[in-house]
Length: 74
Image 1: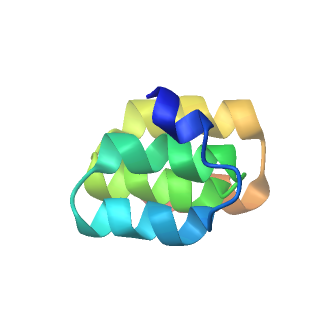
Image 2 (image 1 turned 45 degrees about the vertical axis):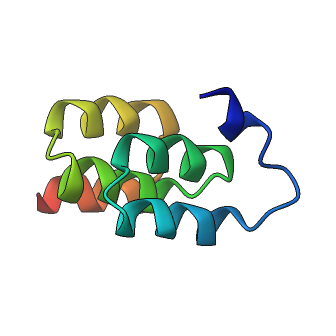
């Protein structure tokens, strides 16, 4: 996914939202991650990819309360 690393002068949140709308969840995750949109990332993992394991791993990596809250609710 080299093309994602080149997304510097574009609206990351908008591109990530388009990826989610188009069901490109694996692409949306690194887009949101690149722009530090961690809460949106955990939503992608839980709501779209339905991977609690990846969400918990991500929670430990970012260590943000807002991210943990969404994983605990799942």
